Length: 215
Image 1 (tube, rainbow, N blue to C red):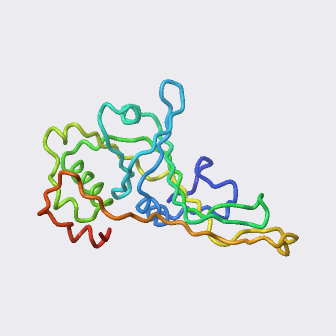
Image 2 (tube, helix red, strand yellow):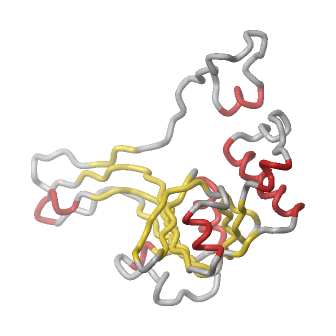
């Protein structure tokens, strides 16, 4: 990643800043969604949406009628945030409570992925990110669905990560207080699969899903 400009340089707790491209990619790949902020008709808007990384681009998709995608396609700069919560940090003082997290801030101007082969590959990566193996099992997009999906790619150039790890940071004078302190780890855990009400009873839960989401 190039040297950070002032927009992406971590100011508060600068020691938590990371500018290594691989670190940024790992966070983007693990996170299931991002929040995209942009200016529309002179007003700030922020919308959560699924994302995927394809090479050195962050890819967004949706209906061509989407306000967000129409605005970004027209050239508006996007400000994108991704956060993964890893734990609640409980200090001995209220002031020093915090969270352990991994986050990415990214800025850029989107370009439409118009080449049919590139667009189909982006669709495949979207599907495989959530459910590896699903692309080869589910029905592929029809011509109508393909044309009715807008794919935008944002170059991952102006980006930084910010990460907090470890125990609480208490003041020296608070260490002897009779207050429990520590970290409560957090992680996203899938629940048991719920078959569609109209699913044919003869269709078994796929093995590729069972490996990732045991039934």
